[in-house]
Length: 322
Image 1 (tube, rainbow, N blue to C red):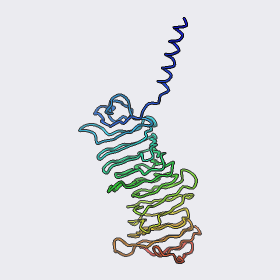
Image 2: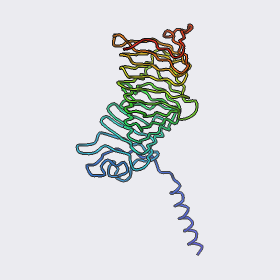
Image 3: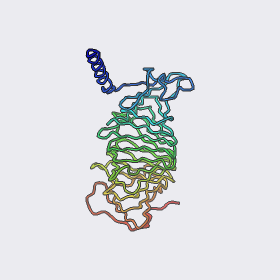
């Protein structure tokens, strides 16, 4: 009886050790299928291992699917991975659900790859301290798309990649705890950058371009600190007649080259000092105009000039357009 008890105890202890051992991180590569479930993230047969699907701690690699195969879609339940690598020709769509990427450099979009945050889709970037290389496109394609950056991090160029965060529809949102931008944000609809947590900073790096295209409005919400690198090369651009760069929170200084073409507008709803130069990249006249509203003060000085800025009073428009 004692012998049976001894071996039973030994077996229980061994099972306990096995069960307590955490599962190792796994790398999954998308293969897709042509069936009805061929785009389902949770369908094991859509992944190369054909045994499970990527979950928390794992790496998901999205490649361009073979002929007649489908791209992945997250739509049934919230998902989480450590690293998401979308390669050339790959497309991942997140709609009506949330995808959390926890790695410090976890969002890795190669040139030609696309992460599409669709209707009611949320992508949370929770890993801070690294650089997320975006060589392709991180797209907010719906008015209810949200990109949440819940730890101070960097969205950066990777070698010669030319990546972008692209907002396409009204009211898409980027909620940040702190972002350094070294690639591009292009806006075609209206997109708001706002705080995910206290004292968030949006930092336009020395190679960054922040641009409102077409009828795009990029709105920086109240409570958000706008900053810049010590270099004088960041670019803030509003390109066409109804494009607007709107600033609703005072920044210590907003540095860069300000491109206002074809009656585009910069709108200030807070006291702000800019350091830079106005450029008419199309070499046409008129350029655009600066609109100062709600009892705000706008101060402007020459690029990299440490002298006293020229200040303008509230509710004043600089420049004119038809």
